[in-house]
Image (tube, rainbow, N blue to C red; front, side, top):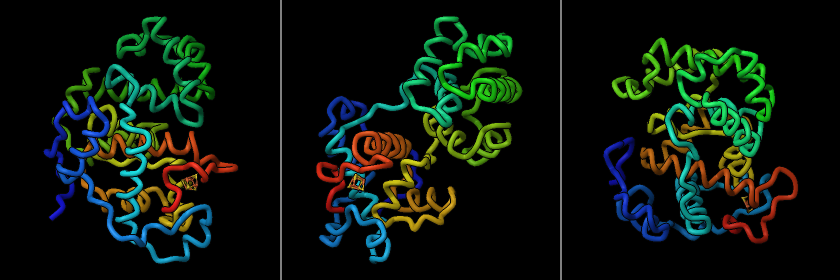
Length: 268
Ligand code: SF4
């Protein structure tokens, strides 16, 4: 029987060195299931028609992962060196592209401010100026200040101290921080604290809607539940899946004019 919400099932690190073997290990470890029925070969480019059809969401969700992983391989997310850098990036990436975030992060690093002490000691105006490339810089500077205050209050600036806090408890505490919404909180939980939370973003909604997994009226919690109920609860799997969805949307499933012809999900 497929295990769910099991944080102990680890894929051996050696498999991550080789994408194909990692994928096989995912199957062997029971993190994903083998593709099931041929009925999956039905959906593409006709979201309205897809939505009307009866599909098996669990099978589609697992097949999507298989196909994306086979095409793109491991994305090795999150592109950051520390937990704190992940958290900073999660705030900076709100409503902007990752390229802009990279410039803001580079500015912080160059100013030797990409640390808890560095950020805490930075005057607000200076912080705003450094993160300007990420857009909405005054708002984001205020949000980062609130997040650092939270890390200070809760963990004395040492994010490793979050280990003893349960995932839901930590999530609720993060959501209580001004400017930290569900997507940002879950990104921090998954990528900074290695907690099994599936991150839902506009990319997730777009491809899921186009393939009939959603009807468009679902809220964040409903979309998250759809994925978490149909996948083994595993940090590495959630990490990889979200990263692959981002890659899919950037390369193929664009907002306008999706490139379905050569997309790995063509036919699903
Ligand atoms: S681009 Fe790919 S994911 Fe997007 S609708 Fe077309 S086949 Fe589906």
